[in-house]
Image (cartoon, rainbow, N blue to C red; front, side, top):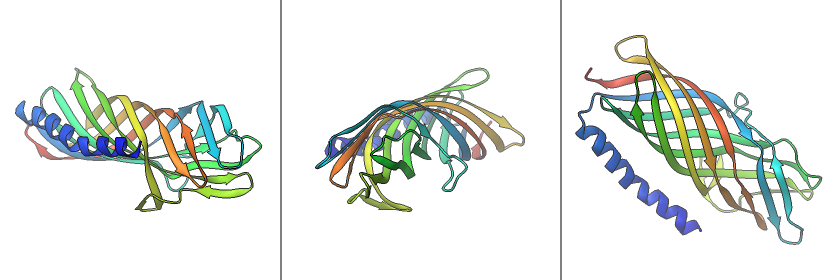
Length: 228
C-alpha cells in the first residue's frame, strides 16, 4: 500500500509537467501566487480504528469538525499558471479533522497538526468563473486517547509539527473567481468539494476513514507574470 502511494507521488511531477506544458503551449498570460484562509464542513463518514488486543472500533457516521480558526489554523498556498482559456496549478492545504462523536472507548481522536493535502489541478475558464478538477495525496498525523492510552504515529516523515504519513489519495472539484483590484493584485474566492481516503498506521494498529468536505476559501494573490 505504501509503495502505491509513493508511486502516485513520483507520478505527480510528470502530470505537472504535461499540464503546465499544455498551458504554456497555449500562450502563457499569467502566473501568480495566492495565500488563502478558509474553513470546511465535513460530511459524516465511516471511521474504523483497529488495535491489537481490542475489538475494532467502528463509527459509521463519524462527525468531524475543522476548527479552522483554532491554532494551527486552516491555510492554503497555491501557484497558478494561466493561458487565455486554461489554468494549471499546484497547492498545499493545511486541514484538520477533529472527531466530535467519539465512542465510549475513545477519549478524543483527531487528525490535526495536519491533514495536509498536496494537490495538482487543471481548470477551464468560463465567462465569470473557472472550473477545476484536481487530485493528489494527503500527509496525515492522527492521534488520540483510545482505550485509556495515548496513541499516535510511531514512524513516518518528520515535518513541521510532528511526524506524518502518506495516508491516501484525494479527488476534488472546485469553482473559483479572481477579483482584481489592481494590475497584479487580486482577491481569490473559491469553493471546493474534496473526497479522500485515509489508511494510516498507528501504535499497535491502524486508522481507516473517508473524509468528504465542502471547503470555502478566501485569499489574496499576486501576478508575478501578467501579459494581458
